[in-house]
Amino acid sequence: MSKIAVIGGGAAGMMAAIRALEKGHQVTLFEKNEKLGKKLYITGKGRCNVTNACEADVFFTHMNGNAKFLYSSFYAFDNQAVQDYIQKAGCPLKVERGNRVFPVSDHSSDVIKALRQRLEKLGCEILYKSEIKELLAEDMPCEADEFLSEDNSKDNGKYKKSKKKKGYEKFVTGVKTGDGKKHFFDSVIVATGGISYPVTGSTGDGYKFGRKLGLDIVEPVPSLVPFETKEIWAHSLQGLALKNVTATLFADGKKVFSQMGELLFTHFGISGPLILTASSELARKKAQDVKVILDLKPAIDAAQFDKRLIREFEENHKKQVKNIMPGIYPARLGEVILELAGIDGERPAYTVTKPERETLVRLTKELPLTITGTRGFDEAIITCGGIALKEVNPSTMECKTVKGLYFAGEVLDLDAHTGGYNLQIAWSTGYLAGDSV
Ligand SMILES: Cc1cc2nc3c(=O)[nH]c(=O)nc-3n(C[C@H](O)[C@H](O)[C@H](O)COP(=O)(O)OP(=O)(O)OC[C@H]3O[C@@H](n4cnc5c(N)ncnc54)[C@H](O)[C@@H]3O)c2cc1C
Image 1 (cartoon, rainbow, N blue to C red):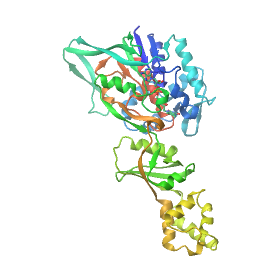
Image 2: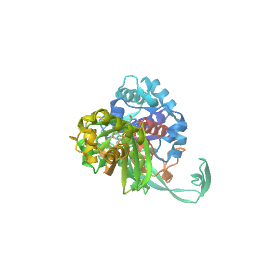
Image 3: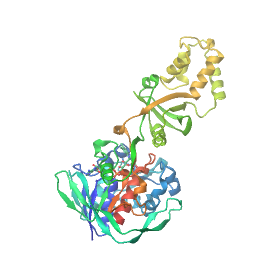
Image 4: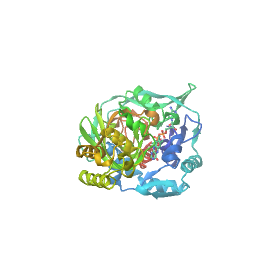
């Protein structure tokens, strides 16, 4: 039996602690908040989209790069295993549209309760309001030895052996709390989350720990986050939700995303599930020039839409154009399109010229928006970036250069689309870290 410290009582930390306890270790869980799972509580709009019940190969396509790193942990504790585990712990689950898994009760608090009870039953020492300020590590002499290191040149997930010279190796020895006290452990699992929604306690502490130990950190950027637009007309549509539109995202002239879905106009630009997903495709690109082109009528092509306009204008030829728009576009969008096309809405429909109609078609099928930036970490569902994956052994979650130190969850440079994938990353990596200590 070893003495294990887990830093962070979120999804990854709780799962890591549970698994380490099940393996017979003595575990102390340090959580800076007064309760466990503060972020988990607000997930899925308070319903907690626990995971996604899709096939494994589909799951990996929802990762934003770095999917290979997750293979070992995912197969050690996959989306089915997570569902089985949470249900067995006392929280029944259901699968909804898009394979999204939620508690039957629709309350995220029931997921947290089930995990907390499991931790308590297994005898976990949970220290609330206990913020870790520093990791303790020491250089210790080591013998020449064989060890495993990742063969980055191969894609097949295999590892090759390499020789280690006699010398010194860094070992984690414990943690230091806010009151300055040192606590000594055999292993430490860092599950401090990312830096998004910092009010939940995820304030990027894991990056500080990593940096201090000389680990490489991939610059954290907000992801699954709304876009700010240059165009003021978009701000004026605040509150308008469009259900079936296509957004195509261009980064420095290159198309990086195109999908149909739901978009929401806000006082600063655009949001909604479609835009959040688009943002995650942008997060890893350092693009200067970012544009979104909206197709407001993706079900029909430009020629078909033009025919519709001709029909509407002919049937209502004496009507003012502004009074025809509500039949074609939702709410205030028609007014905006007319304004962008430079057409006075007071004019009767029969006065609209062919070039003017063509402009309406173009604006409907290819409505351009200039993206000036994303919203900040306060509004980002996830952090893209974090502890560089090259620093961590994907088969164990142990740091390659600091023995006994493990990372799990969002603190790692791993992120995915919305739909339960990000929590699955936390469950899988947490489980594997707890299993490996
Ligand atoms: C609004 C919102 C909705 C979301 N909805 C979903 C969803 O439905 N499905 C989904 O899959 N994903 C969702 N996510 C993403 C998901 O919540 C995260 O990916 C996941 O919670 C990460 O888990 P974690 O355990 O790694 O980190 P966190 O949940 O962030 O937990 C980290 C914990 O560590 C603690 N901590 C940090 N530093 C210290 C320290 N120094 N000492 C002690 N404790 C510390 C924090 O207080 C926190 O409790 C959502 C995110 C947000 C913001």
